[in-house]
Image (cartoon, rainbow, N blue to C red; front, side):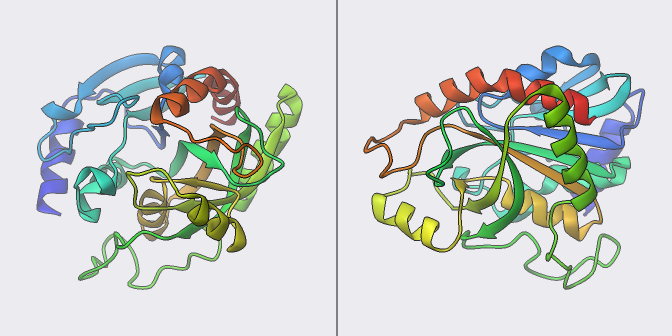
Length: 266
């Protein structure tokens, strides 16, 4: 928390507007930045104790500005457990957000399709999630100033916000699927057996991020909304292996729909 405080003090000295809404941009989903009236762009490398994103398709900046006249901050690039960071580092930015006064968090990601009804390029509203990660960001001594020892996770995504998102998608004429997101450690893509397993336990999409962020945000009392861009159709529906480059390419293409929806949500 000392490091979080130092990062907060640096950022508060750099920004002109404190946002209450934060947006996390996943692989290939950085197009939203073009829609933000940017006031400040701060590289992660400039922020004391901040991790650095090492993944292709992820930027490395905190963006502060206005989206549809609403003050927001956006993370262009996130941090993953598989990059070698521990969980406290993965969720470090969200602790800083809490000190900045952020109350609402929109998480986006590029996710592999598990549901046979999904097609590449679909948007999926995340209604629930399953963690298959080997660690938890709340493990260790609890900081009661941030949240309770045993936070309720029965509704990790805000129900009212989800209903409004469905209404906005309908108004915009955007098809919005719904489903459960499964978080895996990575960085390898899944075997066919692992995909079957994830489908059996109730997954509709699978990825390597988001879960730690949502846990930390709920612990701190933030309202959370999650949206996945489905980057490939399910195996065995399509008996084909996928590469990260293909994932980013589909996310870039489908990102336009996501940008339109996030702008409406904000």
